[in-house]
Length: 244
Length: 132
Figure 1 (cartoon, rainbow over the protein chains, first blue to last red):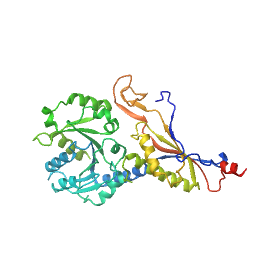
Figure 2 (figure 1 turned 180 degrees about the horizontal axis):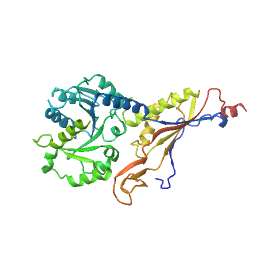
Figure 3 (figure 1 turned 90 degrees about the vertical axis):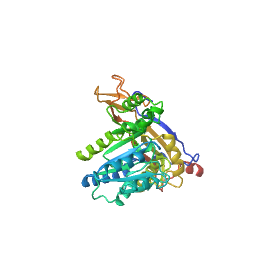
Figure 4 (figure 1 turned 45 degrees about the vertical axis):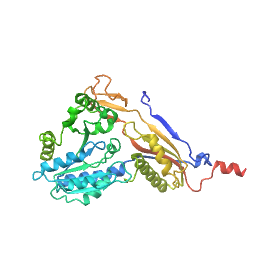
């Protein structure tokens, strides 16, 4: 990579169909666009953000690799906040409504989005899902993104906070391997802490790695299946809604 | 939106849409060159983007376009030292304090910088050669 501050002129795709009839130089017109490629997504994200603001809804975008325990954490969260905070959930998965069915069992309103071929939720997906949710009393909206540590990082959904989740059954170096997502996350939730006695997971090293890509990131340790394993996470959520 | 097997395909779809709209607005029937700016911290892999373009551009004004990728240097701002430094994706820490309390100054760019193309009545040099 360049170290002199000059733009690198990167790889070029040559004409894929071989030599073509080249136009005369004077016939070629250069149109300067300087246009953001994600502007359409950002337009929808701004609309979502305005809706959340006007209705007083605090929105969290949960991102992690598949199997980190997002849905289990959500189900336990919703059960423990029942009668206290009014919640709703948007579930993003490539296929199936399995996660939405698990959420629906808690009696919390949920919309499932199947992204089919897509590896992430975008702001337009979320806007469509919002149309199907009863938003009137909602204080806290969880958007469970598609399990993926790369693509969701690029797509603003209009959320208030990005939450990265990571289970202790994953490698401690996940934050180093996927620095963009862990850098952008406002909070890192470590899950499945009750499994630590059975694993060779270095919690201190994991914390160091997370802080290396995002110094000062709030790290919350959770264990959805133990009585006090959700304490800090629930306290965090209550505070966010209170301050919203 | 939202129908892409890899997110680079979604990015490529957006690029094709932007270019087709600009070509139409400027009466270009063919785009010969497209210049994209892809930041190092944008999360977009140029090889995957290239793969997506090969699938998406046939039949569009971009079908035969050369695509140039401009990658600006990764510039980070250390909030502790209050200095800017050139970042390295393999180690994002500030070289002065070895901390990673950085903000991305430059590196998240994803933009269509420019297109170069011809309108319908343009003659081709090769066509003229054939006429000679």
